[in-house]
Image (cartoon, rainbow, N blue to C red):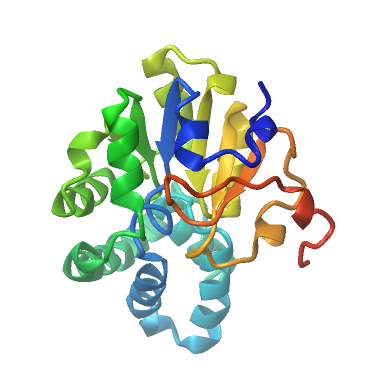
Length: 250
């Protein structure tokens, strides 16, 4: 059954028809998107606003990539640095990503859950449905924030940003022996959509905390394999993507 056939269905009911449900973390389970933007801005402050401000827009646009990918993009595109294998990048990465991690260690555990996140996760877990988290956040950090909210035990695994998200989704499919069409990712960014498409998994765009409007996130999405949820209320109704077609900002 195409995911689009669940349009008008309650979120929990639609997800329960799958063999595997994967959640993005930031902006979906945890209200932490803006917190991470400010931590990134502070971690790179030494390079001045003329370099950092344009990069912060890129950081928002590509939110969901792994941490290494984010810092590599700044080093290459804004500092004119070499490829990821260069010694200069490793020195830069150790210093700046380390500073970013220190800021997150202080602030991230205080980030609140997104509304209804605990209700939906526990409802699906009670059904015996395999649940995973796939996130650009490092695994230990993701597990820590979920543990602080009493949710980490509801997931089969938390798959962090040590590897690209598409690879993490493929690993979850393999672990459960599920076909891509039997699984769905709940995300809030275009990077989430692209990762889901890369492995053939269904995608539910969760609105409310993402940086960009649905039309921009869903531009070019397969309307048969994507839906939109206004938050994580288990009883909330899913909507199709047709309302957003042709309205994406460029």
